[in-house]
Every structure is written in C-alpha cells, then in structure tokens.
Length: 499
Image 1 (tube, helix red, strand yellow):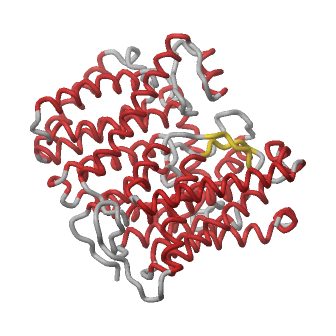
Image 2 (tube, rainbow, N blue to C red):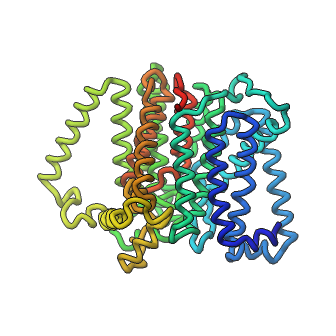
Image 3 (cartoon, rainbow, N blue to C red):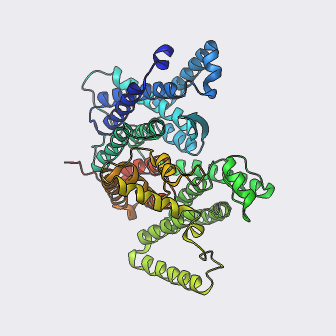
C-alpha cells in the first residue's frame, strides 16, 4: 500500500479528490442505508490515502517513513482505538453526539501542501468511529432491511430535502473546481479535511434520535469546555503570553492591546465558539421558567462574556448581537426586536458622530477594518476577472499575492468575506449555490423555532455564524456550521422532500 501511495500521481490525486466529494454527496443524498454505508466507508478509506500521498515527503512524516515498524504499530493502535470507539457508539448511539461536541474545538497543527493547517484530528477520529458504527452493521445486514426507529440515540429515517442537495452540490462543485485551481494542494486539504468529513458528520448526526435531554447534555459539554477555555484565556491575559499561534503572538508585541486565543489558533475562531455557546445559554434562559436555571445561565454568561471581551474579536461581537436579535425576535416578536435594534443603532450612530476617534473610525478603511478592506477589494477584482468560472478552489491566496506582489501576512487565504471569496474562487455558479444554501438553511432552521428551545438556539447560533463568516472566514470549513445544520434538520417539525 505504501508503494501505491508514494507513486500516486497528480492526475490520480485530482481524480481522488473528485471521487471523495462524490462519495460524500452520495452519503448526503442516497436513500438506501446499505448504499449510504458503502459510500461512507469509501470516503473513510479514500481520504487518508489522499492525505498520506500529499504529506508523505513532509518532515512531519519522516519518522514513519524511516521506521516501518513504528508506522505499522501506530496503524494497528489506531485501528484498535477506532474499533473500540465504533463498538461503544454502536451500543449507545447518543455517544456520537456527545463525543462530537467534546471534540469540536480541538485542533492539531499538520503540515500539508507546503503549509501548516490546524486540523480537527480528535473530531476526525470521532467521525471515523461513527462511520464504522453506522456502516458495518448495515453492510452485514440482509438486503432490503430498513432502518428501525427505536429509543433515544437510535437512527431515525429521514427523507433528503433541498438543504441536503445544496450541501452535496457545494461539496462536489468545490472538488471539481479544484481541478483547475492554481493551489490544488490547498483545495485538496480543504476537501479531505473539511468538506468530506463534515458531510459524513452531518449525515451521522442528522440520523440520531435527538431529544431535549440529549441536546441539553451536548450543551453541558460545550459549556464546560468553554469555561475551561475562558480560564486558560484569563491565564494568558494575566501572564501576557499566548500558548499557540506565532502570528498572534507577534501581533501582540506590536500593538497596544493584547488578544487571547486560549487553545484555539485564532482569537476570532475562539470568539465564534464562545458566541455559539453563549447564544445557546441565552435561549435556555429566555424560555426557561425555573428561576434557579435562569440564575445559573446568567452566571455562565458573565464568565463567557469576560472571555469573549479578551479576544477583541469585532466579528464575534457583531455575530453575538445578531444572534441575540434573532433570539429576541423568536421570543418576543419581530416588531419588538426591530425596535430594540433600531434604538441601539441610533445610539451607536450618535456615539460615532460625537467622538469618531474614541470608537476607532478615524483613518482609512484598512485601519478601521484591520486590513480587511484591501482583501475585500482584491477579492472583488479577482471575481471581476473571471466572473463565470472563478480561479478555482482555494486559489484566492496565490492569485491575490500575485496581483498585489505581496508575501505578507495580509495575503490571507480568504478575503475575510465568504461571498467574495466564493465569487473569486468559484465564480457565478458557486456564488449562486452559496446564496441558495444560506437562504434555505436559515429558512429551514427558523421554521417553527419559537416552539423549541433547542431549535431557537440552533437557529440563532447559525445566523450568528453566517454573519461571522461575512466578517471573517470559514463557512463550510467549520464543523460548527455542519453540526448546527444537522441538529436543526433533525429537530425540524416536518421535512419537505426535494423535487
């Protein structure tokens, strides 16, 4: 197998990326449990092969290249761990949801495609265990055996809807447009590390029998993790030392402020996680009639807000405000929420006009937006050059650098505004698909959300995440997006099948 992996050519890797995306699309769309299981296993096997072929010559892989015995032992140990995890999830399917919630935030730096990516290795292991627990019993079962609805955590048969078709289309389109990208390695990383595994995660989570109790347990897991991350952030701020991300460490040395990122590699992604948890807690407090629970939620929110302030993430603050607006509209009606938002907006405009320097709006657009205005302008120019096909998946970074003649950190991998990044990389077709996906997703999650605390929390958190991506990056590259969609779809009162 090692010889086959090492001799895998560029054409085979390109074809492999497309095949992996097609398998992920099949997982989202096929109705037969057996066919879905086969597609899951195919994607689970193919993505590690593509990964090893891509990083075989990197320094990180050198110990395994030179020590075949160590590589074999590591492989056997990994298979044993996956087997144990799959057995546990098969016995208690709700463990998949809890394990996924626990693994969501944790990232490990891995070198691939000549760059270092912060990858969700623990979450990948959970997904692999979930795939094995789902696929093996169904492939061994007699043909024609249908899914059975049983107790909590057991699989529920759900018809595919328009949302699944749009998600599958987004995955396949991204892989196809990787074939002509100037950064194929980057597109390969995005496909095999984000789009394909998160599609599998969506398919697994959406078939769990979700209850209010299971959703509450997942929230407890996330809240405990968030509190721990905030405590680490307090330590970082007190010592003026960051544990991770040299870029942020260097930035703090040259600025008058100090940003924390806890165990995340980015203060904005850390802030996005805190905002998601905060909105879930706020939803619980708004709809709960138990005073003790409301008081506990208020105490938790004070702690999380203190952690969020230390990130100095403007995109996270904005996302939180929008999410709170959604919750207010669901709880008290759109009219009251609009009036409240209008009042805050008026106060904000008055403050800006009265003291622009105090709120940091004096100076150039780049200074106000922390350099993002140039990225946005560059993305619009790229999109205008190739409006139909785009430059290819993950091509924003090299194409932007080539036109700006820049190798600085401002030459980001994205424009920090997802629609512009999509338009530049994937052209008109990709932009239309993105807009349709966002619109259908929000409509699906908001439908009937007032009648369920969990659905209200999911809807507000997803809208906040979308707003965050408009100011930062990472939409379908974030497992939070797929997880929120899966939970919202699973809790939806009724599904409308696609034509």
